[in-house]
Image (cartoon, rainbow, N blue to C red; front, side):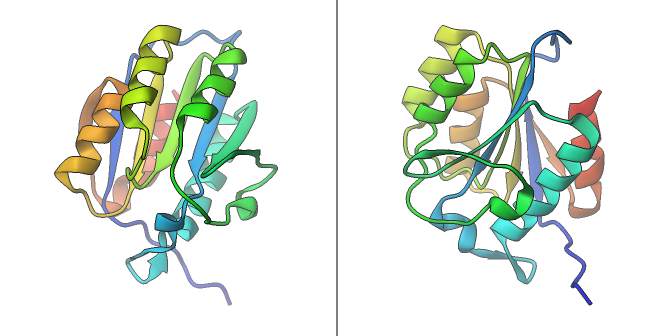
Length: 169
């Protein structure tokens, strides 16, 4: 019997809610080593897998990319396997080439190249919403605020599914 995964404290960083239906939704998933850290008795990447499964079911993203030291295309949630650093910039550049209507970022917030990412988001006029998995720190929140150029809404563990639904409307 599989253990039921409950999500740790999560935060949603919401960018502009305007999106066009013609443009694809792109899901970006943190696959770095920090996703091995435990939250609520499970590694963060397991929480990310559950979140990705829900996003796939609700939003049906056109593309799913994992990022770490390099970019990888993910076929399914179980492809999320942590390794390396958290370099998001290359993934954002690749996603921008797809002319997305919205990017949904799933991360623990420990992004190595946040300043570069913020510049890419601004230059490419990307809409980024983020789901934060982990225990919030002010530096993680500042990193996500910078990358998503948005506001932060606290979401408790049982509300994560509702947060995912917010992103799918």
